[in-house]
Image 1 (tube, rainbow, N blue to C red):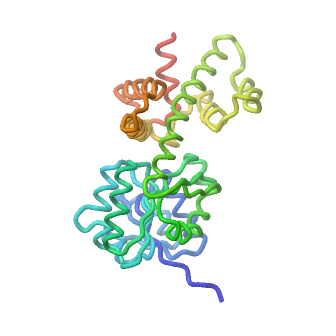
Image 2: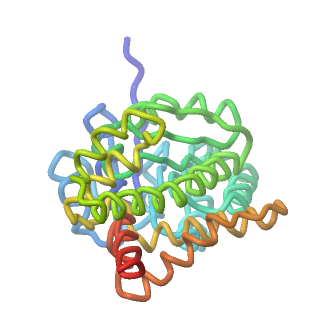
Image 3: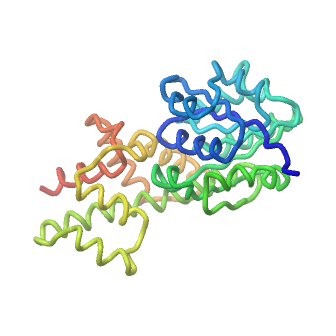
Length: 294
């Protein structure tokens, strides 16, 4: 006899969260959804999800709550604020924050949840909008082993590579490593495309050739093609990547580590945002580059 699936609450149904919640719904999980912009829940409601009026209502209805929101301040308010998830969750509930956020905040949430008999995981993701739509995300988890095992069936509906990296905060630290790697890689991809175009080459042909060699990366194959098409729509927002890089920079400094590549790319993105590109996709870094090499 098949075990009854837990009721899941999903907070944050935007570019990433919407498809992720959709996979849970299609896998048969009873689903409550909440988003500050209620219109972003309409597609899920039309498929059978139930809309909640607040995070507190999500907590009251759900055995598992998943959050995928924008910034650490949002995470802190939703989890630790008045009528937040930690205060309102059912005893024994499992809380999974999939936002890219602060490792320190992840530890605080875990400790606050533990005092109330609630389990908490930090489980940020990588793979962008494409990975979210295709249930092919890489999911990096921090927290206790028993909570991780409980979460695995849900995480497997959304991701392809799922790994527990250590205790509370370890998922977020792993995501910082991921974002540090992406920052310099994205700059390299932009420079490579600019070079190919200046040399009179077909940049699409260049990518199709070099993506199978030592230059291979998700960023080259996916964002590189968007750059060539001059498609700067967000799979991942400039403003959110700035947030991630700032967290990574603070965390690196706290560890006594200097990250010159990260610092350089962060400055470029901050200038890009000042030019009104905050809501563009991260591949808009190419716009900054061509303006400075023309």
